[in-house]
Image 1 (cartoon, one colour):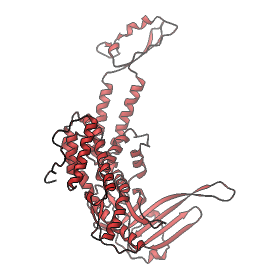
Image 2 (tube, helix red, strand yellow):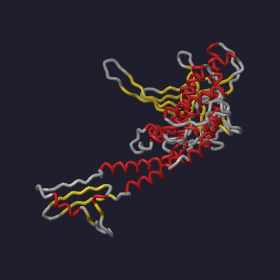
Image 3 (cartoon, helix red, strand yellow):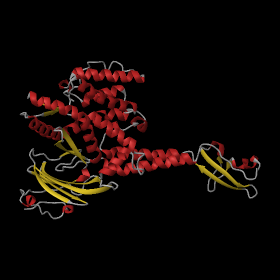
Image 4 (tube, one colour):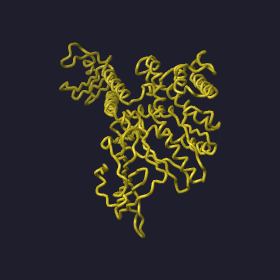
Length: 472
């Protein structure tokens, strides 16, 4: 009898807890929960301490998530396939959000539920609300959740009052224990876990044996340093305007400052030509005393700071766990398209790797969801499999929506200098090797149209119907 409970839970008096089946526990993540709030703020640019790095991180995560796309549920049973079709439409909006959360914080936790209208929905839980796991090996069988809820109460002839309550949930396949501790009352209840659902951990880049993944918190410090350098550059440019400014006292003769046009700074080995300086500020305080304040900024100061910013930018990209192909201005950073060409295959393989690591969880989520939907509608359901490229199973509207999302991500990569039209075309074929030829031709036409809009020649290499590369 050894159940590992987070210390914040305290003593349990519920007899259902005491009489519950005893589980072997291997909590490998208790103190490793991501700082979800600050990571979300970094993505959204809400934190002034690092928001200059936010556009780069957000663009990379958005592009990557759009290219990973949404799963396609497939079943041999016609009735089950009808339910999958509904979930496929729902996944269009939810899947990119789940991927963004897992890439950002390391793990997206999702649990299927039924709302008051009897419709299925997927509740997404922030990683810092998951206190621990129970289980051994590749699968866990218990999850502890904890979060603070805010609510408003309205009493007669009184202003609304905000209150808070701590909600704690313990999920196992047999039961769900819920405890709510509020300002006025506390509630404990135990429910049967009828469908045996658990919060599913969509972990990104997880280590073997770990149920939590690794997000961009690895590049947090680099992002902060990158922000600091850019902010420093901005302050220099705003303070030292590229012009000569002179203040004279008592309507003095402007010719008196001519001697300062060529001057020698204290400790300098040679004179500096003021008129040729890149940034200069000059102020004469008193003609009689010939006293002056002379501020000189060397012409390579901004250039040197840019080199430091570039160093932290590369460190930020490396620590993010995302290929640099998805970050903006890769060509400008590296000087040419060589790096984009070399990372095209790496970027495509990262898309497929993310799809593979999510497939196990999507299969569980789809199967549990159709079981719940079938129960509510009185339908016997079959097994659901997951695919990422079977666009031929979607209706035309749904197919167009998904292809447009992929093409939009490719357009973002092209506009940000992540590759040429030919490179992005090859990337597409590497990332989606099983896509039907007809759908591939539609995407090829979309890439060609993108090139025409931008005025770039596509050449003969990306003609519609071009066969897919072998071995990818």
